Length: 120
Image (cartoon, helix red, strand yellow):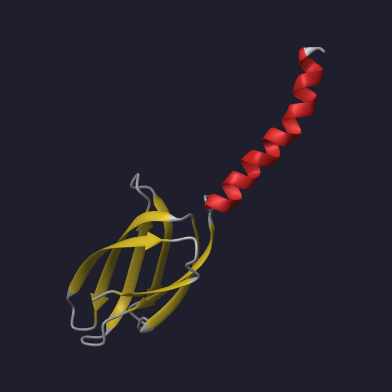
């Protein structure tokens, strides 16, 4: 039997095993709903959030609100994230002229579909 024939017979089995391992470990990115909750007092006029992966790269980002339109107190954000550890960085501009930077750790598990995050 030639090497090509052996490879042709075993390659599909190997590909199926690798796909099953990837699927059952949940290693792929999938859509997760992040619900951002802003502090009530003082009201936030603008919010900017970034979700950083373990390497410090921006995995997802969102900003809402402006000087003319205040930021919604709760904001849903659909993000493509793989299971793992992340770091949240948020910058909040407030109606009283102050600003606040918030950092949080975030853990995404395979079962997570929606996560509520308070930025206080």
